[in-house]
Amino acid sequence: MRHDAVGDRPARARRTAAADRHAVAHRRRARLRLAGRARPPFVIVAVVGDSISAGSPLWDPDPVVRATIAQPDERSQWQWWAAQRDPSLEFHTRAVYGRRTDEIASFVDDVVDGADLLVVQGGINDVAQRRSVEEAARNLAAIVARGRALGLTVALADVLPWPAGDDRAAREILRLNELIHAIEGVIPLPFHDTLARLDVPWSDDGDHPSVEGHRLLGEAAVTALARGRRTHARATGRAGARPDGG
Image 1 (cartoon, one colour):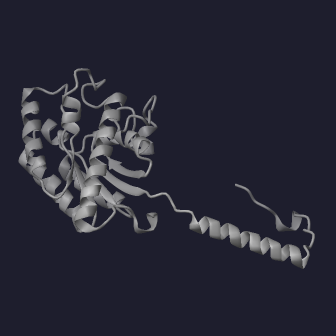
Image 2 (image 1 turned 30 degrees about the vertical axis):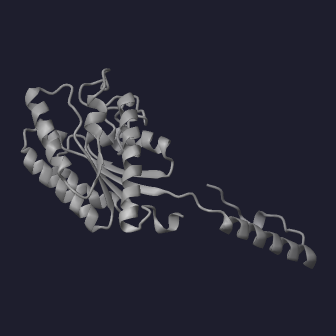
Image 3 (image 1 turned 135 degrees about the vertical axis):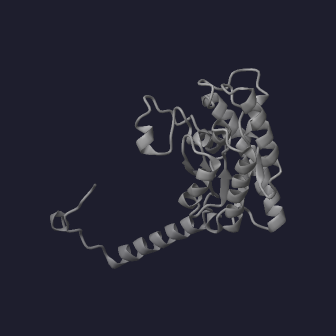
């Protein structure tokens, strides 16, 4: 950190009055130019979820967890790819490996400060742990209601296919997604179909998206969020960006 000792700096030569007036005028013109320059719009997106939004197995938003990854790769996040596609999006993520929907609910307060949008993602761990998918859907609906009560536009992701899962898990995922799609007042993020329709592998470990899988999810998210924000703006007269964001 730079530190200047005032007593060690050489005295500056006194400028003439005319020079002082010129410097003041120059600074005033510079301030006016900066004030007149529009700030780029930005949207803060809060994300709550499980390992899918955490970026497992190659990334984690928690630096302590990330330090345990042998070769971390920030591209192993759908949020990273979304921000590459739309630089106006700034993501604040609280997502933890293995968490169920009832546990994800507690993450909301960690990331919503200053947010414009809330992305809710979860459900696969409820399926993996053989929990009721009806209960999982109710938990997700409650998180959505919490976000809307805070005045946020809410996007809700459905559950990805599970390549390493069995037939029971596949049926439960489809049932849970039916319930998720019935939740109203959200921007739907079609994560399941984005990957399910592919003819090529999109997972390296059978559980999580590969970097390429995250790229596809990120692009799908940007498209859905842009469409949803336009619809929300028409319905409410709100642009979806922070009031001071231009």
